Length: 330
Image: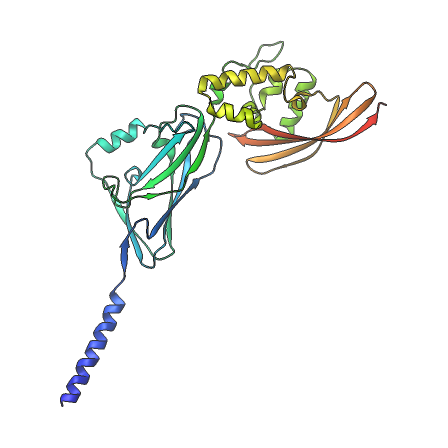
């Protein structure tokens, strides 16, 4: 009888341990030791100061469980109570928070949130507009980190910090072009870039150079990008303030018109043929054979124009030139 009782007790002990093991799930709060945050630009495009809605800087944020346990954290319905962005420029000056963000966080209010549970290896992602957090007033190079608060913004003892992103904010197209209002020669009508294909952009640019109509020549050209293709000029430009950059662009345009620099892009071919055009939704190349007349021979060169699109408009932002051969004048 005693032996039977001991067996029964042992059976119930093993059974209880089995039930406990089935119902127990190890959980842990998000920390730098068991969670990881990754950030990357979402649908990357050309970025300009201001214009939060029209020109957002969307960042794709991912929280990943790197532990063997279930990972739990809070995520506010208004992400501004769960997330933060920090950015410094090339002079290590930190960007200020937007007024709307400060008001939001300084106002007493109920913060609604969900508790997210991630199993080992699982991840949770969302997209946020950096411009809703940081006030970007000037064009510059910025170094951005994303900060996540697993227990919401007001409990900052635990944070997850992403690796640094490099954000290039270019001068506003209107601001950088304010000194140059392209007009149609003869009529004085303001020229407007049109949503034409990359090969047509290149074709019209070359024809404009043949006709020496500079406003049309620059209409589809990203002067800032071409200026920065030279490493020395690019470093000076990135370190300059907004006003100085505008002056540099003005001088660059004037130097191009006088063929002082980048003479290949302003050289005048007497004939040309577009041989190949390839492009995706945002990037493309156009290859052109251009002929240049010299006193005793004709020089053939292959130009590859690199183009990219923003808001439906293709622009030339880079080019390469290969000398092919010479031919006798016919």
